[in-house]
Every structure is written in C-alpha cells, then in structure tokens.
Image (cartoon, helix red, strand yellow):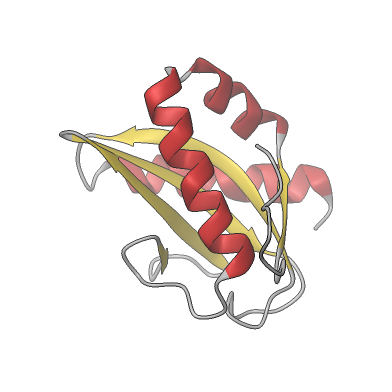
Length: 122
C-alpha cells in the first residue's frame, strides 16, 4: 500500500484494520492489482466507474472500489471522509473488502462498513 510516485496526490487513502487484514490475506498478484487501483484513486481527479462506483443502497458516502483479477471480482467498501462526492474528497478510508460472489453479498458488507465507520467516529 505504497504512495504514488511522480504524480500529484489528490486523495489520501486511509485503511481500516478490517481492510488491512483482508489485503494481507490476498495473494501477491491480486495485491499488485489493488495497489494499481489505489494509485488511480490517489492521483486521478475523475475516477472511472470501472474502478470506483457510488453505492446506491446506502445512506452515507459509501462507494465500492472494484478490482477484477481473472474471473474473480473483488470489492472494497470505502467512505469519502471529507466530502459526500468522492471526486471532491481529499481523504477516503477503505473499510472492508470481499470477493464478490453475488449481489446478495452487498447488504451484509454495507452493514459491516457502517459499523466500522461508527466505531471510528467518522
């Protein structure tokens, strides 16, 4: 989870303990793709929805970071800390990650993310 090189950092990324645990459990090939996606979030002002998308079923500033490796689709719930719109945000936190198996996975993961936010007092 290194900082970007040679590009201006637009957004600072923080990591919850839950996300760090998830990230460490991934194999190296997947972690490389995650790190590449982190750099897009840090340095690209308007992030393509291929990488980050607003979660419509959530009441707060929750988004999903999308990473695909082969047939596996990984999702990370993230929170825009200092602005409701991630494009305007300068600080975000990655809350929890999971391997997407179906759309049914989202309800449980959103509740988990909201609990993390509450515990962090964000």
